[in-house]
Length: 465
Image (cartoon, rainbow, N blue to C red; front, side):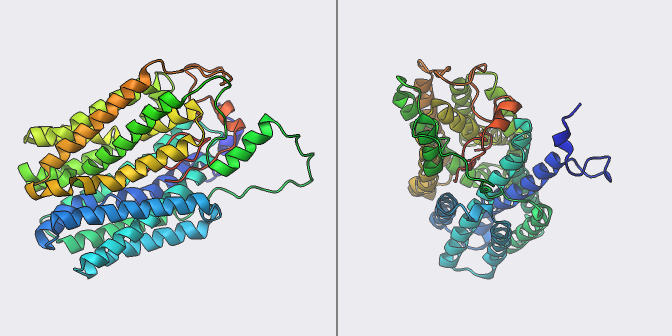
C-alpha cells in the first residue's frame, strides 16, 4: 500500500490524473529532453548535413561544439552563484523559450560567427534548464524512491532519440535548415509539456526565532554546506581520502574529454563508412539506450561497489567509441550506439556518488569543474585530426576513456567502502541510493554543471552531460 504522501495531488481516484510524483517525473523529463536531448545534442546528427549542405568545415564544426560547451559552463556557474535564478519558474520558462529561439535562428544565416554565438547561447540556456529542473525534481521527489529521479533524467535520452528520429526522417526529404526548424518545433512541444514544472521552493524563514546553536562541528558543517555547494559533510576524523579523490578526479576529467568527442562526432564518423541513414539511426539508439541508464546504474550502485561499476562502465564505453573506427559494418555501428548510450550518463551517476561518499571538501563542485573543462577541451584536442575524417578522433577518444578506466582501477585499490561515521547501510550507498526514509530526512541541495548528476539527491544535481 503506497504511503499517503505519494498521492497528495492528482491520484487516479481524483479524476484519473497521474499521481503527483509521476507528474513531476514527466514534466522534468520533458524539460531535460528540451534542454539537453534537443537543445544540446541535436547538433550531433545535424552536423553531417551542415558539412554536406552548408559548407561547414570540420574545424568550424568543432568550434561550434566548443562554444556550446563553454556556454553550458557559464550557465551552470550562474546557477551556482545566483541561487535565486534556479528557484524561478520565470527563468526556467524564459530559458526554454530562448533555447527554442536559438534553434530556430540557426538556419537564418550562413555566418559561422553567428552560429558560434547561437550555440554559445544555447549552452547557457541548456545549463539553466538542467540546473533548475534537477533542483525541482529532487526537491519534490526527496521522499520517494530514488529510481523515480533516474527515470526523469532519462528524459535526456528521450530528447536525443526524438530529435534523432526527426533528423533521420528529414535526411532525404529536407535540408539542414529544415532539420533545425523541426528541432525547434520539437523543443516547443516538449516545452509545453514541461511548462507546469515547479522549481525548488525558496527556503522558508522560521516562524519564530530558534535558539542559535553553539559553535561546533554541526554548525561548521552547515556553514560549509551553504558556502560550498556540496554536502558539507567533512571527511571522517583520521581518514584521508585525497588519494582516492585524486584518482576519481583524473578519471572523471578524462571521461569529460573522451565522451564529448564521441557525443559530438559519432554520427559523422559512422557516416564515413556506412550509409548516411545509419549514423542518424545509431544516434536514435544512443538516446533509447540512455533512457533507462540512469535508473539502472543507480540501482546497481546501491548493490555493488561503485569503483568496480565505474571501471566496468568506462571500459564498455571505450569499446563502444572505438567500434565504428575499427569495424565498418552496420552492426558495429549499432552496437557502438547502444554501448555509448547506456554508459555516458551512468558514468556521471557513479562518479558523483563516489565523490560524495569520499566526503572530500567540495567534491561534487571539483568533479564538475574537471568534467566541464574536459568537455570544452575535447573538440579542440581532436581538431587537427579532423582533416583526415573522424575515425582518428574516435580512436583518440577511446584511448582517453581507457586512460580514465586505468585511473578508476587505481581508485579501486583499498577504496574505503565504509567510511567511519557514515550511515550503517550496505556498501554505504551515496545519498539518493540510501533508503527512502534516510533520503527524506536530509535536505536536497543542488549542484551546477551533468550526462548527466542524475541520482545524488543530497548534493547538487547537475549532470554535466
